[in-house]
Length: 185
Image (tube, rainbow, N blue to C red; front, side, top):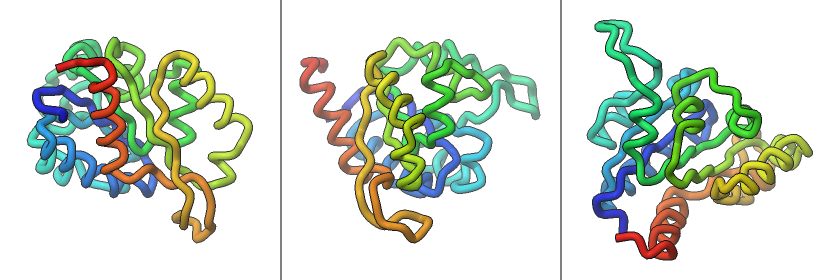
């Protein structure tokens, strides 16, 4: 499965961030070593303490630790990983990934990543279907980012439609399938 794989889990600021706790737990349960990167806004939806407990690693949000000045090198973080998954991937983060905006630790790490990158979009149906989001996802896919398609169902807005983040078990299955296809141990 994912035994011995080093997985970066990027979490952005959307309501689907609550699912990232289950995702972190499943990745660890499947043998992966997990490090979590959060955008500052993601902390409004789920706490770093929850994710640190489930991933068994400190959660990284900022470029440096304000307590002791320790630097969190996005290059070292990116080079550590066998794969990076951004889940949930908001419309904002997808747009920044597509245009190369690097205004937080998660995005600078993405731009430095040499490993395969996966995104699991999560947003309201109108945002998901907006031509800008559609174009950003197409551009990311063209550049080799693996898109784990959004699901259809009830959304946080109360509307029904496509935009729900894929279920954590499906995201894990996508990673496992990718590693099997590449015949990587």
